[in-house]
Image 1 (spheres, rainbow, N blue to C red):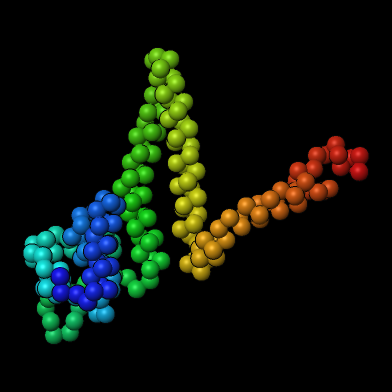
Image 2 (image 1 turned 180 degrees about the vertical axis):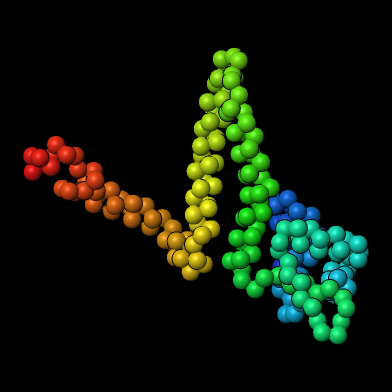
Length: 194
């Protein structure tokens, strides 16, 4: 690698983490190099910085394009293809989550739906199907929540994420408000007595 020490440390770590996230280590290195680059890079620039083969870089760039994580940027007077990452880190994370959902969560939901539509033939299958229903309902709840969160503007999403466990306090306050006279938790018979 021909990178300054700080950059090299980040690129190496990102490649290591990429292999744990299910992408090739070299693809992780390529993305890290593009992410920290001051300007768009062509494949030759990436080969030079990483010291890997041109074919590895080409395959890595294709994989990153399939994940919608790269942007092509033409350079006037240069016929080569230049690449960069989106400037907005939040857009990158949203794209990653979307792509992982498409590749991992959606197929699981499809299989669970199909299995839940089958008529169980044995008590063992009935038990299994009940467990699958629990799993399906939880994943569906999370994906519905995710769809709602995806619609939020970045600023609102940051506010939501910043709340952390304070959200529990908000929910507790809501519960207390609804148990006050006239609140939703207050029964009609109790209203009649008041």
